[in-house]
Length: 178
Image (tube, rainbow, N blue to C red; front, side, top):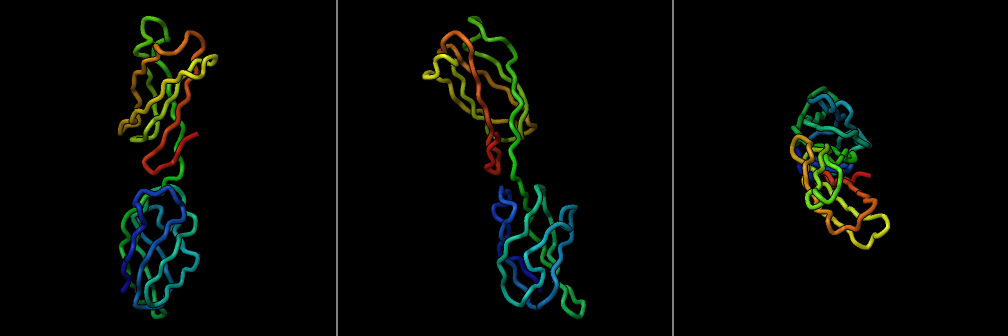
């Protein structure tokens, strides 16, 4: 008998060596079956011992995992534990954003920006005049579930001249883009 005691938590994690706790009533060799990524899962030791074991996975590539832990004893008997599904996400890709209209006196109170980024992430932005950096316009917006970005920013408080914008995202797993 193999039981999951503590699943990978949180189920969306930014660590690629998460901890997992299981128990087994037999010593035996461990393996993983299930989805496309399950064959790549390993622990530092792939030998199960009777009782409860907490261990970290060896490095896991980004992806979603819905797997079954299998413990096979020396006689070929197998015990299985269906693992709670989890996702490894260690990278936040930088957003791709452009402004849809040139900044001028007619639209400076609602400059439109569009683009794409990782779905449901949060986009952080800062705009300032390169010669007068003490005045800044900062804010956040949420990327929609399809990865689309659409927002307007009032830049009328900035001095005339070259405006610089800096943006980054924080995804649902807590990763920050460059």
